[in-house]
Amino acid sequence: AQTVTQSQPEMSVQEAETVTLSCTYDTSESDYYLFWYKQPPSRQMILVIRQEAYKQQNATENRFSVNFQKAAKSFSLKISDSQLGDAAMYFCAYKGRSNYQLIWGAGTKLIIKP
Amino acid sequence: NAGVMQNPRHLVRRRGQEARLRCSPMKGHSHVYWYRQLPEEGLKFMVYLQKENIIDESGMPKERFSAEFPKEGPSILRIQQVVRGDSAAYFCASSPGSGLGNTEAFFGQGTRLTVV
Image 1 (spheres, chains in turn purple, green):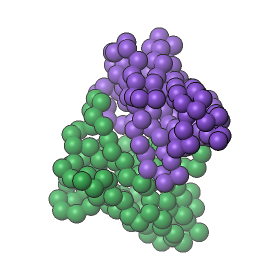
Image 2: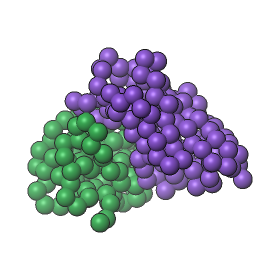
Image 3: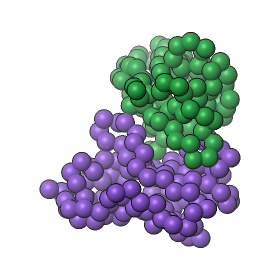
């Protein structure tokens, strides 16, 4: 069975600085997708960035980028130039190519210090 | 284009009562997924439905829980005879297609169920 592990329950960063959130996963599948979701206090689950396992190039969305290490089964999220609006819970999620279920990590609470 | 709408946002039920959670998918989406989020945990898959069909309910508790997605109207997650352990946030997501591959599922804001 697939599992997703986020080992950092909470992270804090100074506004305008860079922070990296860790995520590791376990799977025997070779083709899958990885996602980072943001959950602000409103509880709305918002897709931040996604990575397709067969793509070697790391995904980037504006200030958000990932470091995808397939052999190490690692999928970290880097947030550059942190802003107060980035404060939220961040969840890493996995989905097999032939599946529709998302497998979720326990989340990392990100605190932005002004 | 309205997003996924869930109601109510907050629901309080006494032990033994029934809870009904509603989810209206995004316009044009015919696939709905329900997830449960316990405190301090990530989401756990419960059930996947298409219009009038349950495709996968492998994550649903065998007793007291049921889900439907009728031809007309919202998807309903029903919990009978609620217990304190049912207290959680319940999220609904929808997608235009089967959700396989990297098809994005769009989430609602969830319903927070509190059993007292």
